[in-house]
Image (tube, rainbow, N blue to C red):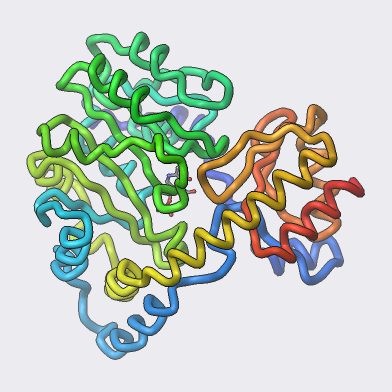
Length: 356
Ligand SMILES: Cc1ncc(COP(=O)(O)O)c(C=O)c1O
């Protein structure tokens, strides 16, 4: 792999995580603020996941199972695929990095949408590779333009479905038409971090491409609906030959034992998933109604966050909300992204937005 020069490393933009709430409150002299900035599950972690951790704490002097045998077995049973088609990562974020390091070779290029999840670009740049960004169209991946952007150096195409930060999806028909145009040797990375929140029946089932042996890697995570973001664990489905290559590149113990145990239990916590979807749908309806009432532009979402265009400097609005203890994410010149929270959090956001 090409090594970056120190100047190239200095030119990389670091991921900007939010400050700890306690630190922000201290700086602003406020208390009781709410965080609607990172698309976390507002109802908290899966209770079954939490309970599973306790039983594993006494074994923390042991290394985790590097092959995550039991978790892979649980995932393979739930989704009807072979354990050899599953890869695990320290969050799906790490999987994105592993994918780039494994497959994006010298002289090859990646394609991603703009705006989309920023890590596609960051991982590509950090590996010293070229990325081509294709603007969204009406807030959605422009799959026709992305297929047009493919050239003979294209190796990876990243697609977030639903997309972060817009919450939009590409439909079955659009994805299938796209897959028909993509050359078989390119790898389509389908990032489905918000998969469980999707209620639109037009959402594509990408497993058919795995069964067909296409170069596709579908990524999922325990950070969102399962509420385990702090444990850092995500998973992906890919043909066994691609999983085998990624396993050669990843660190031997990249997922920790508590995360594996919690993830396995959370995967079977249907009640928590159902309740998370219910709270999200309820919050979505409330926010749609209030934003419409205020005449604020937003995009209907299939995820647990909403993309809002305020048609004025997003940073100014972000700061005004912050002072009222409501933390959102500025996401463009005039746009913010707000995570759908608990009813009281949504009400507080609406009130703060109305008063800004
Ligand atoms: C589209 C998308 N993919 C991946 C991730 C990373 O999730 P993880 O916590 O599994 O690394 C996020 C997190 O915000 C996301 O929005």
